Amino acid sequence: MLFNSLEFAVFFPAVVLLYLLIPRKLRCPWLLVASYFFYMGWNPKYAVLILASTIITWLSGILMGRVPENRKKLVVAGSFFLNLSILVLFKYFDFLLHNLNTILQSLHLTVVDKPFDVLLPVGISFYTFQALSYTVDVYRGEIEPEKNLMRYALFVSFFPQLVAGPIERSGNLLTQIQELPKKKLWNYERVTGGLILMIWGLFLKMVIADRAAVLVDQIFDNYQIYGFFGLSVGAVTFALQIYCDFASYSTIAIGAAQVMNFQLIENFNTPYFAKSIPDFWRRWHISLSSWFRDYLYVPLGGSRCSKLCRYRNILITFLVSGLWHGANWTYVVWGGIHGLYQVIGYELRGVKEWLNQKFHTKTDCISYKLGQVCTTFLLTDLAWIFFRSNTLGDAFYYLERMFTKPDFWCFFNGEIYSLGLERQEIHILLLGLLLLFLTDLIQYFRKERLDVFLAEQNLWFRWGVLLCLIGAIAIFGVYGPAYDAKQFIYFQF
Image (tube, rainbow, N blue to C red; front, side):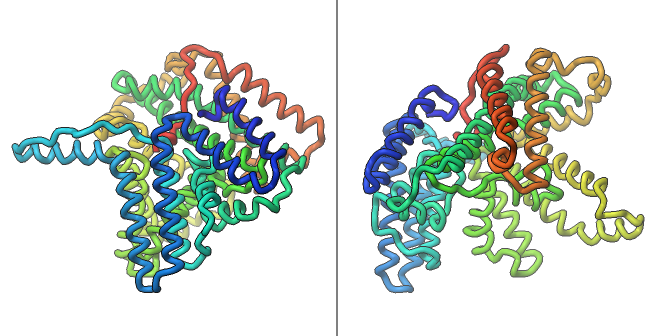
Protein backbone atom coordinates (compact mmCIF):
# COMPACT_ATOMS: atom_id res chain seq x y z
CA MET A 1 0.00 0.00 0.00
CA LEU A 2 1.63 3.22 -1.17
CA PHE A 3 1.37 6.48 0.74
CA ASN A 4 0.46 8.19 -2.54
CA SER A 5 -2.39 5.81 -3.33
CA LEU A 6 -6.16 5.97 -3.01
CA GLU A 7 -6.03 2.88 -0.78
CA PHE A 8 -3.92 4.69 1.81
CA ALA A 9 -6.18 7.75 1.58
CA VAL A 10 -8.98 5.47 2.83
CA PHE A 11 -6.88 3.27 5.12
CA PHE A 12 -5.18 5.97 7.19
CA PRO A 13 -8.26 8.02 8.22
CA ALA A 14 -10.11 4.80 9.08
CA VAL A 15 -7.23 3.58 11.26
CA VAL A 16 -6.89 6.94 13.03
CA LEU A 17 -10.64 7.32 13.59
CA LEU A 18 -10.95 3.94 15.27
CA TYR A 19 -7.69 4.54 17.13
CA LEU A 20 -9.22 7.67 18.67
CA LEU A 21 -12.52 5.99 19.57
CA ILE A 22 -11.63 2.54 20.90
CA PRO A 23 -10.83 1.85 24.58
CA ARG A 24 -7.24 2.48 25.66
CA LYS A 25 -6.40 -1.19 26.15
CA LEU A 26 -7.29 -1.94 22.52
CA ARG A 27 -4.98 0.69 21.00
CA CYS A 28 -1.94 -1.55 20.74
CA PRO A 29 -3.73 -4.58 19.21
CA TRP A 30 -5.58 -2.31 16.78
CA LEU A 31 -2.37 -0.67 15.52
CA LEU A 32 -0.71 -4.08 15.27
CA VAL A 33 -3.56 -5.45 13.13
CA ALA A 34 -3.50 -2.30 11.00
CA SER A 35 0.27 -2.57 10.56
CA TYR A 36 0.14 -6.18 9.39
CA PHE A 37 -2.77 -5.37 7.06
CA PHE A 38 -0.72 -2.50 5.65
CA TYR A 39 2.30 -4.74 5.04
CA MET A 40 0.28 -7.63 3.62
CA GLY A 41 -1.03 -5.29 0.94
CA TRP A 42 2.14 -6.08 -1.05
CA ASN A 43 2.41 -9.83 -0.49
CA PRO A 44 0.49 -11.54 2.33
CA LYS A 45 2.93 -14.48 2.44
CA TYR A 46 5.84 -12.28 3.47
CA ALA A 47 4.09 -11.34 6.71
CA VAL A 48 5.58 -14.65 7.90
CA LEU A 49 9.08 -13.17 7.54
CA ILE A 50 8.42 -10.10 9.65
CA LEU A 51 6.68 -12.31 12.21
CA ALA A 52 9.71 -14.65 12.28
CA SER A 53 12.11 -11.73 12.78
CA THR A 54 9.85 -10.40 15.53
CA ILE A 55 9.68 -13.69 17.44
CA ILE A 56 13.41 -14.39 17.10
CA THR A 57 14.49 -11.01 18.46
CA TRP A 58 11.77 -10.95 21.14
CA LEU A 59 12.86 -14.36 22.44
CA SER A 60 16.48 -13.19 22.31
CA GLY A 61 15.61 -10.28 24.58
CA ILE A 62 13.76 -12.56 26.99
CA LEU A 63 16.69 -15.01 27.06
CA MET A 64 19.21 -12.27 27.77
CA GLY A 65 17.20 -11.35 30.83
CA ARG A 66 17.56 -14.90 32.15
CA VAL A 67 20.92 -16.33 31.08
CA PRO A 68 24.26 -15.63 32.79
CA GLU A 69 26.30 -12.69 31.58
CA ASN A 70 28.80 -14.87 29.75
CA ARG A 71 26.01 -16.46 27.66
CA LYS A 72 24.44 -13.23 26.43
CA LYS A 73 26.88 -12.88 23.53
CA LEU A 74 25.79 -16.28 22.27
CA VAL A 75 22.17 -15.13 22.30
CA VAL A 76 23.05 -11.96 20.37
CA ALA A 77 25.09 -13.99 17.88
CA GLY A 78 22.19 -16.41 17.38
CA SER A 79 19.74 -13.56 16.83
CA PHE A 80 22.03 -11.93 14.27
CA PHE A 81 22.73 -15.23 12.50
CA LEU A 82 19.06 -16.15 12.09
CA ASN A 83 17.89 -12.68 11.05
CA LEU A 84 20.76 -12.04 8.66
CA SER A 85 20.30 -15.52 7.17
CA ILE A 86 16.73 -14.60 6.28
CA LEU A 87 17.92 -11.27 4.87
CA VAL A 88 20.66 -12.91 2.79
CA LEU A 89 18.34 -15.61 1.46
CA PHE A 90 15.67 -13.23 0.24
CA LYS A 91 17.79 -10.23 -0.75
CA TYR A 92 21.28 -11.45 -1.65
CA PHE A 93 20.85 -15.07 -2.76
CA ASP A 94 20.67 -14.27 -6.49
CA PHE A 95 23.59 -11.85 -6.18
CA LEU A 96 25.79 -14.41 -4.41
CA LEU A 97 24.83 -17.18 -6.83
CA HIS A 98 25.56 -14.99 -9.86
CA ASN A 99 29.01 -14.07 -8.54
CA LEU A 100 29.73 -17.69 -7.61
CA ASN A 101 28.85 -18.80 -11.15
CA THR A 102 31.04 -16.05 -12.61
CA ILE A 103 33.99 -17.41 -10.63
CA LEU A 104 33.18 -21.00 -11.60
CA GLN A 105 32.94 -20.07 -15.27
CA SER A 106 36.31 -18.33 -15.14
CA LEU A 107 37.76 -21.58 -13.74
CA HIS A 108 35.92 -23.64 -16.40
CA LEU A 109 33.89 -25.42 -13.77
CA THR A 110 30.21 -26.36 -13.76
CA VAL A 111 27.88 -23.55 -12.77
CA VAL A 112 25.27 -23.96 -10.04
CA ASP A 113 21.65 -23.93 -11.15
CA LYS A 114 19.26 -21.63 -9.36
CA PRO A 115 17.16 -23.89 -7.09
CA PHE A 116 14.25 -21.51 -6.57
CA ASP A 117 13.01 -17.99 -7.27
CA VAL A 118 12.50 -15.47 -4.49
CA LEU A 119 10.83 -12.08 -4.61
CA LEU A 120 12.43 -9.34 -2.51
CA PRO A 121 10.11 -8.61 0.43
CA VAL A 122 9.35 -4.90 0.75
CA GLY A 123 11.28 -3.19 3.54
CA ILE A 124 13.07 -6.32 4.76
CA SER A 125 16.34 -4.45 5.38
CA PHE A 126 14.57 -1.78 7.40
CA TYR A 127 12.61 -3.96 9.83
CA THR A 128 15.49 -6.44 10.16
CA PHE A 129 17.88 -3.70 11.25
CA GLN A 130 15.27 -2.25 13.60
CA ALA A 131 14.72 -5.62 15.25
CA LEU A 132 18.47 -6.30 15.52
CA SER A 133 19.08 -2.93 17.16
CA TYR A 134 16.67 -4.00 19.93
CA THR A 135 18.75 -7.14 20.52
CA VAL A 136 21.94 -5.10 20.90
CA ASP A 137 20.25 -2.48 23.10
CA VAL A 138 19.06 -5.19 25.49
CA TYR A 139 22.53 -6.75 25.52
CA ARG A 140 24.12 -3.37 26.34
CA GLY A 141 21.61 -2.77 29.12
CA GLU A 142 20.20 0.33 27.42
CA ILE A 143 16.66 -1.04 27.60
CA GLU A 144 14.90 -3.73 29.59
CA PRO A 145 13.64 -6.79 27.68
CA GLU A 146 10.05 -6.30 26.53
CA LYS A 147 7.97 -9.13 27.96
CA ASN A 148 4.78 -8.28 26.06
CA LEU A 149 5.00 -9.82 22.58
CA MET A 150 2.18 -7.66 21.21
CA ARG A 151 3.91 -4.42 22.16
CA TYR A 152 7.20 -5.63 20.74
CA ALA A 153 5.54 -6.81 17.53
CA LEU A 154 4.08 -3.34 17.07
CA PHE A 155 7.53 -1.84 17.55
CA VAL A 156 8.90 -3.95 14.67
CA SER A 157 5.90 -3.50 12.36
CA PHE A 158 4.59 0.04 13.11
CA PHE A 159 3.10 0.83 9.71
CA PRO A 160 4.11 4.48 9.11
CA GLN A 161 7.81 3.65 9.08
CA LEU A 162 7.70 -0.07 8.40
CA VAL A 163 8.93 -0.37 4.82
CA ALA A 164 11.31 2.59 4.35
CA GLY A 165 12.14 4.00 7.76
CA PRO A 166 13.15 5.91 9.70
CA ILE A 167 14.84 2.93 11.37
CA GLU A 168 13.65 3.42 14.93
CA ARG A 169 15.43 2.61 18.18
CA SER A 170 13.76 0.71 20.98
CA GLY A 171 14.58 3.49 23.41
CA ASN A 172 12.38 5.84 21.41
CA LEU A 173 9.52 3.99 19.70
CA LEU A 174 9.15 0.97 22.00
CA THR A 175 9.08 3.27 25.02
CA GLN A 176 6.23 5.25 23.43
CA ILE A 177 4.34 2.03 22.69
CA GLN A 178 4.69 0.98 26.32
CA GLU A 179 3.09 4.28 27.33
CA LEU A 180 0.30 3.96 24.75
CA PRO A 181 -2.59 3.41 27.24
CA LYS A 182 -1.64 6.66 29.01
CA LYS A 183 -1.33 8.80 25.89
CA LYS A 184 -3.61 11.75 25.29
CA LEU A 185 -4.43 11.24 21.65
CA TRP A 186 -6.19 14.41 20.52
CA ASN A 187 -4.26 17.64 20.28
CA TYR A 188 -5.21 20.07 17.53
CA GLU A 189 -1.74 21.58 17.03
CA ARG A 190 -0.03 18.19 16.99
CA VAL A 191 -2.55 16.61 14.60
CA THR A 192 -2.54 19.54 12.18
CA GLY A 193 1.25 19.61 12.32
CA GLY A 194 1.33 15.94 11.36
CA LEU A 195 -1.08 16.50 8.48
CA ILE A 196 1.06 19.40 7.22
CA LEU A 197 4.08 17.08 7.12
CA MET A 198 2.08 14.46 5.23
CA ILE A 199 0.94 17.03 2.66
CA TRP A 200 4.49 18.31 2.23
CA GLY A 201 5.73 14.75 1.80
CA LEU A 202 3.13 14.07 -0.89
CA PHE A 203 4.20 17.26 -2.68
CA LEU A 204 7.83 16.17 -2.66
CA LYS A 205 6.88 12.76 -4.03
CA MET A 206 4.13 13.48 -6.53
CA VAL A 207 5.10 16.88 -7.87
CA ILE A 208 8.91 16.75 -7.76
CA ALA A 209 10.29 13.20 -7.42
CA ASP A 210 7.96 11.40 -9.83
CA ARG A 211 8.27 14.17 -12.40
CA ALA A 212 12.07 14.21 -12.09
CA ALA A 213 12.02 10.41 -12.54
CA VAL A 214 10.78 10.82 -16.12
CA LEU A 215 13.83 12.90 -17.04
CA VAL A 216 16.26 10.73 -15.06
CA ASP A 217 14.99 7.49 -16.62
CA GLN A 218 15.23 8.97 -20.12
CA ILE A 219 18.88 9.99 -19.64
CA PHE A 220 20.19 6.97 -17.70
CA ASP A 221 18.43 4.51 -20.01
CA ASN A 222 19.89 6.21 -23.09
CA TYR A 223 23.11 7.70 -21.76
CA GLN A 224 25.07 6.53 -24.82
CA ILE A 225 23.53 9.31 -26.95
CA TYR A 226 24.20 12.22 -24.60
CA GLY A 227 27.21 14.40 -23.90
CA PHE A 228 28.31 16.50 -20.95
CA PHE A 229 25.15 18.60 -20.79
CA GLY A 230 22.56 15.82 -20.83
CA LEU A 231 24.54 13.53 -18.53
CA SER A 232 25.20 16.35 -16.03
CA VAL A 233 21.51 17.22 -16.00
CA GLY A 234 20.69 13.54 -15.45
CA ALA A 235 23.11 13.19 -12.54
CA VAL A 236 22.00 16.39 -10.81
CA THR A 237 18.33 15.59 -11.33
CA PHE A 238 18.77 12.10 -9.90
CA ALA A 239 20.42 13.58 -6.79
CA LEU A 240 17.33 15.75 -6.35
CA GLN A 241 14.94 12.93 -7.25
CA ILE A 242 16.28 10.47 -4.69
CA TYR A 243 16.34 13.17 -2.01
CA CYS A 244 12.74 14.17 -2.66
CA ASP A 245 11.61 10.56 -3.03
CA PHE A 246 13.19 9.26 0.16
CA ALA A 247 12.64 12.40 2.23
CA SER A 248 9.00 12.37 1.15
CA TYR A 249 8.47 8.88 2.60
CA SER A 250 10.20 9.80 5.85
CA THR A 251 8.23 13.05 6.08
CA ILE A 252 4.89 11.30 5.51
CA ALA A 253 5.85 8.60 8.02
CA ILE A 254 6.82 11.15 10.66
CA GLY A 255 3.63 13.12 10.00
CA ALA A 256 1.37 10.06 10.13
CA ALA A 257 2.96 8.94 13.40
CA GLN A 258 2.60 12.45 14.83
CA VAL A 259 -1.14 12.41 14.08
CA MET A 260 -1.32 9.36 16.37
CA ASN A 261 0.95 10.98 18.98
CA PHE A 262 4.14 9.10 18.15
CA GLN A 263 7.39 10.99 17.63
CA LEU A 264 9.71 9.36 15.13
CA ILE A 265 13.32 10.42 14.75
CA GLU A 266 14.28 12.86 12.00
CA ASN A 267 15.75 11.19 8.93
CA PHE A 268 16.88 14.16 6.82
CA ASN A 269 18.27 17.54 7.73
CA THR A 270 19.03 19.60 4.60
CA PRO A 271 21.71 17.14 3.35
CA TYR A 272 22.62 19.15 0.27
CA PHE A 273 23.61 22.09 2.45
CA ALA A 274 26.36 19.93 3.99
CA LYS A 275 29.85 21.44 3.96
CA SER A 276 31.73 18.11 3.92
CA ILE A 277 31.11 14.42 3.27
CA PRO A 278 30.99 13.56 7.03
CA ASP A 279 28.54 16.44 7.44
CA PHE A 280 26.47 15.02 4.57
CA TRP A 281 26.16 11.69 6.38
CA ARG A 282 25.08 13.45 9.56
CA ARG A 283 22.21 14.90 7.53
CA TRP A 284 21.31 12.13 5.05
CA HIS A 285 19.32 9.04 6.09
CA ILE A 286 20.19 9.85 9.69
CA SER A 287 18.58 6.75 11.16
CA LEU A 288 20.67 4.40 8.99
CA SER A 289 23.87 6.42 9.34
CA SER A 290 23.56 6.39 13.13
CA TRP A 291 22.70 2.65 13.05
CA PHE A 292 25.93 1.81 11.26
CA ARG A 293 27.86 4.15 13.52
CA ASP A 294 26.51 2.64 16.75
CA TYR A 295 26.25 -1.02 15.76
CA LEU A 296 29.15 -1.49 13.31
CA TYR A 297 31.67 1.38 13.27
CA VAL A 298 31.98 1.73 17.06
CA PRO A 299 32.17 -2.05 17.75
CA LEU A 300 34.93 -2.28 15.12
CA GLY A 301 36.90 0.23 17.15
CA GLY A 302 35.57 3.50 15.77
CA SER A 303 38.11 6.29 15.89
CA ARG A 304 39.68 5.18 19.18
CA CYS A 305 42.51 3.34 17.49
CA SER A 306 45.40 3.93 15.11
CA LYS A 307 44.89 5.94 11.95
CA LEU A 308 45.06 2.85 9.72
CA CYS A 309 42.51 1.00 11.85
CA ARG A 310 40.25 4.02 11.82
CA TYR A 311 40.38 4.18 8.02
CA ARG A 312 39.75 0.43 7.85
CA ASN A 313 36.68 0.85 10.07
CA ILE A 314 35.38 3.69 7.89
CA LEU A 315 35.80 1.69 4.67
CA ILE A 316 34.20 -1.45 6.12
CA THR A 317 31.25 0.56 7.41
CA PHE A 318 30.61 2.27 4.10
CA LEU A 319 31.10 -0.87 2.02
CA VAL A 320 28.55 -2.70 4.18
CA SER A 321 26.26 0.33 3.99
CA GLY A 322 26.49 0.19 0.21
CA LEU A 323 25.67 -3.53 0.18
CA TRP A 324 22.73 -2.88 2.51
CA HIS A 325 21.19 -0.70 -0.20
CA GLY A 326 21.10 -3.45 -2.79
CA ALA A 327 22.48 -6.69 -4.18
CA ASN A 328 24.61 -5.09 -6.88
CA TRP A 329 28.26 -4.10 -7.11
CA THR A 330 27.16 -0.59 -8.05
CA TYR A 331 25.90 -0.06 -4.50
CA VAL A 332 29.05 -1.51 -2.97
CA VAL A 333 31.23 0.80 -5.07
CA TRP A 334 28.97 3.75 -4.20
CA GLY A 335 29.51 3.01 -0.50
CA GLY A 336 33.24 2.53 -1.05
CA ILE A 337 33.48 5.90 -2.82
CA HIS A 338 31.95 7.64 0.20
CA GLY A 339 34.35 5.79 2.47
CA LEU A 340 37.30 6.92 0.32
CA TYR A 341 35.97 10.47 0.35
CA GLN A 342 36.20 10.46 4.14
CA VAL A 343 39.65 8.85 4.26
CA ILE A 344 41.04 11.29 1.67
CA GLY A 345 39.37 14.18 3.46
CA TYR A 346 41.10 13.30 6.72
CA GLU A 347 44.45 12.90 4.95
CA LEU A 348 44.15 16.24 3.16
CA ARG A 349 42.99 18.19 6.20
CA GLY A 350 46.51 19.46 6.93
CA VAL A 351 47.08 20.37 3.27
CA LYS A 352 43.83 22.33 3.18
CA GLU A 353 44.75 24.27 6.33
CA TRP A 354 48.20 25.03 4.87
CA LEU A 355 46.69 26.29 1.63
CA ASN A 356 44.21 28.47 3.51
CA GLN A 357 47.06 30.06 5.47
CA LYS A 358 49.29 30.36 2.39
CA PHE A 359 46.68 32.22 0.37
CA HIS A 360 45.10 34.05 3.35
CA THR A 361 41.74 32.45 2.67
CA LYS A 362 38.85 33.75 4.78
CA THR A 363 37.13 30.65 6.12
CA ASP A 364 34.35 32.39 8.04
CA CYS A 365 32.73 34.13 5.07
CA ILE A 366 29.75 33.00 3.03
CA SER A 367 31.78 32.51 -0.18
CA TYR A 368 34.04 29.93 1.49
CA LYS A 369 31.09 28.07 3.00
CA LEU A 370 29.24 28.18 -0.32
CA GLY A 371 32.32 26.68 -1.97
CA GLN A 372 32.30 23.87 0.60
CA VAL A 373 28.61 23.19 -0.06
CA CYS A 374 29.10 23.12 -3.84
CA THR A 375 32.15 20.87 -3.59
CA THR A 376 30.34 18.44 -1.30
CA PHE A 377 27.32 18.33 -3.61
CA LEU A 378 29.57 17.71 -6.64
CA LEU A 379 31.34 14.80 -4.93
CA THR A 380 28.06 13.35 -3.72
CA ASP A 381 26.50 13.72 -7.15
CA LEU A 382 29.36 11.89 -8.88
CA ALA A 383 28.89 8.99 -6.47
CA TRP A 384 25.13 8.94 -7.19
CA ILE A 385 25.92 7.95 -10.78
CA PHE A 386 27.10 4.55 -9.52
CA PHE A 387 24.04 4.25 -7.30
CA ARG A 388 21.65 4.84 -10.22
CA SER A 389 23.45 2.86 -12.93
CA ASN A 390 22.48 -0.73 -13.66
CA THR A 391 26.06 -2.00 -13.86
CA LEU A 392 29.55 -0.79 -13.07
CA GLY A 393 30.26 -0.70 -16.80
CA ASP A 394 27.32 1.64 -17.33
CA ALA A 395 28.54 3.91 -14.54
CA PHE A 396 32.09 4.16 -15.86
CA TYR A 397 30.92 4.73 -19.44
CA TYR A 398 28.48 7.37 -18.18
CA LEU A 399 31.37 9.21 -16.51
CA GLU A 400 33.60 8.75 -19.55
CA ARG A 401 31.05 10.32 -21.88
CA MET A 402 30.37 13.12 -19.41
CA PHE A 403 34.00 14.22 -19.42
CA THR A 404 34.92 13.43 -23.04
CA LYS A 405 31.85 14.63 -24.95
CA PRO A 406 31.67 18.39 -24.34
CA ASP A 407 28.55 20.13 -25.62
CA PHE A 408 28.47 23.31 -23.57
CA TRP A 409 26.35 25.08 -26.18
CA CYS A 410 23.44 22.90 -25.07
CA PHE A 411 23.18 25.03 -21.91
CA PHE A 412 21.84 27.83 -24.10
CA ASN A 413 19.98 26.23 -27.03
CA GLY A 414 16.97 24.75 -25.22
CA GLU A 415 18.30 21.17 -25.28
CA ILE A 416 16.88 20.63 -21.79
CA TYR A 417 13.38 20.49 -23.27
CA SER A 418 14.25 17.34 -25.22
CA LEU A 419 15.31 15.22 -22.27
CA GLY A 420 11.97 13.51 -21.61
CA LEU A 421 9.88 16.36 -20.18
CA GLU A 422 8.12 19.04 -22.20
CA ARG A 423 8.64 22.72 -21.51
CA GLN A 424 5.65 23.07 -19.18
CA GLU A 425 6.70 20.02 -17.17
CA ILE A 426 10.24 21.36 -16.78
CA HIS A 427 8.88 24.65 -15.47
CA ILE A 428 6.66 22.86 -12.94
CA LEU A 429 9.65 20.83 -11.80
CA LEU A 430 11.80 23.95 -11.41
CA LEU A 431 9.09 25.72 -9.41
CA GLY A 432 8.79 22.69 -7.14
CA LEU A 433 12.54 22.64 -6.61
CA LEU A 434 12.52 26.36 -5.81
CA LEU A 435 9.92 25.74 -3.09
CA LEU A 436 12.03 22.85 -1.76
CA PHE A 437 15.10 25.11 -1.68
CA LEU A 438 13.24 27.80 0.28
CA THR A 439 11.87 25.23 2.73
CA ASP A 440 15.33 23.76 3.28
CA LEU A 441 16.72 27.25 3.82
CA ILE A 442 14.18 27.82 6.57
CA GLN A 443 15.08 24.50 8.18
CA TYR A 444 18.81 25.15 7.84
CA PHE A 445 18.86 28.64 9.34
CA ARG A 446 15.92 28.50 11.75
CA LYS A 447 16.32 24.83 12.75
CA GLU A 448 12.57 24.34 12.23
CA ARG A 449 10.56 21.85 10.22
CA LEU A 450 7.84 23.15 7.93
CA ASP A 451 5.03 22.30 10.38
CA VAL A 452 6.69 24.29 13.19
CA PHE A 453 7.45 27.23 10.89
CA LEU A 454 3.86 27.41 9.60
CA ALA A 455 2.44 27.13 13.13
CA GLU A 456 4.24 30.40 13.95
CA GLN A 457 2.70 32.28 11.01
CA ASN A 458 -0.62 34.09 10.63
CA LEU A 459 -3.63 31.95 9.84
CA TRP A 460 -4.07 33.35 6.31
CA PHE A 461 -0.44 32.56 5.41
CA ARG A 462 -0.58 29.06 6.85
CA TRP A 463 -3.76 28.14 4.99
CA GLY A 464 -2.54 29.83 1.83
CA VAL A 465 0.57 27.64 1.78
CA LEU A 466 -1.42 24.48 2.53
CA LEU A 467 -4.02 25.16 -0.15
CA CYS A 468 -1.28 25.82 -2.69
CA LEU A 469 0.41 22.53 -1.80
CA ILE A 470 -2.86 20.59 -1.97
CA GLY A 471 -3.73 22.25 -5.27
CA ALA A 472 -0.29 21.45 -6.70
CA ILE A 473 -0.63 17.80 -5.65
CA ALA A 474 -4.13 17.53 -7.12
CA ILE A 475 -3.30 19.27 -10.41
CA PHE A 476 0.38 18.74 -11.09
CA GLY A 477 0.90 15.49 -9.23
CA VAL A 478 -1.45 13.37 -11.33
CA TYR A 479 -0.97 14.42 -14.94
CA GLY A 480 1.69 15.06 -17.52
CA PRO A 481 3.33 13.47 -20.56
CA ALA A 482 4.92 10.14 -19.83
CA TYR A 483 3.77 10.48 -16.21
CA ASP A 484 3.79 7.27 -14.23
CA ALA A 485 3.13 7.01 -10.52
CA LYS A 486 6.26 5.47 -9.02
CA GLN A 487 6.64 3.49 -5.86
CA PHE A 488 9.19 4.90 -3.45
CA ILE A 489 12.79 4.18 -4.49
CA TYR A 490 13.86 2.90 -1.09
CA PHE A 491 11.15 0.21 -1.05
CA GLN A 492 13.63 -1.99 -2.95
CA PHE A 493 16.13 -1.78 -0.10
